[in-house]
Image 1 (cartoon, helix red, strand yellow):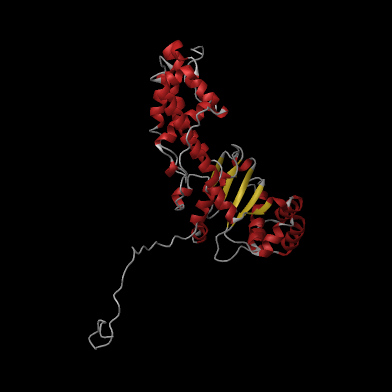
Image 2 (image 1 turned 120 degrees about the vertical axis):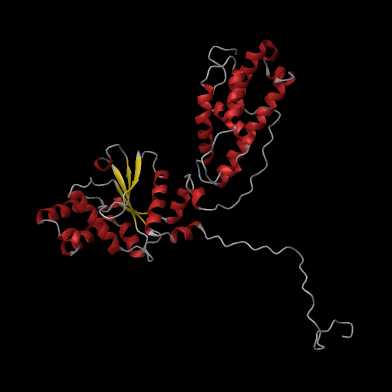
Length: 365
């Protein structure tokens, strides 16, 4: 041990600490489910209000009504302009420290029937209980609507709930008759995992949760031979070139050999396939709808630019491509992956779908 370094007391010293690489510490990021579980009742209702429009495209309006005097409505989703006087769905939010149980749910159902009898609203089409967790007996009860209706009516006759006891005897009878005539399959629970997956399709997801960074695959390279799926936007480009250069570029072969049109066609195909790679990435990584949201954002501006008066289809195309580069995209989990070339490519996807046209009708073919 004579060759070892010794400490102040003559004992062998500890070997020096050697770092073989940088030590990185990452902050703990709770899952979206844990974040939602931590919401207070008000924040939970706001989260539900964000989520509900992702369920039904037919909803004309979604309103949060929770609070004192809400008559048992937390989030109302209207299927018509008649609001609570027409078809509507009720989303009852229950954010408790423990799982939602039958006694609490039954109290809310009583409140709903009383609200109908008192003419605060018509009977909703669906009544959705939204809670981070459900007690097993409640889930079992909601899965057996006929048996649960009988149980509810039996409890209703003996309840001392002031929602019912403060009604007149005639109103109490109306409540019982309404409950007896109601199909209890209208009362359903929502699974939190499904709810979170659906919330991902809304613009609010990116603002509430830090999504995991995913690696976008390399941009697709256009094949030498034009794919049949390219036909429509390529035909539109051919019309643009024929309108500008007449008979110089009336076939794909002549376009390839043209000093300007050939290079332009190559760049547009690269843009189309860049957007196609984004579409496939979105399809595989996220729920449906994110790429279409990008398409809709670009179309909103592009169609207005395209409606202006232009001498040539070439001028319209160039103006639309330039405008697409400046479009403010709705913030979703996909937005961070959108590149400038994708925006140009989306214009050609829109042309491929017939949503954008470059040349006026009756122009060069």
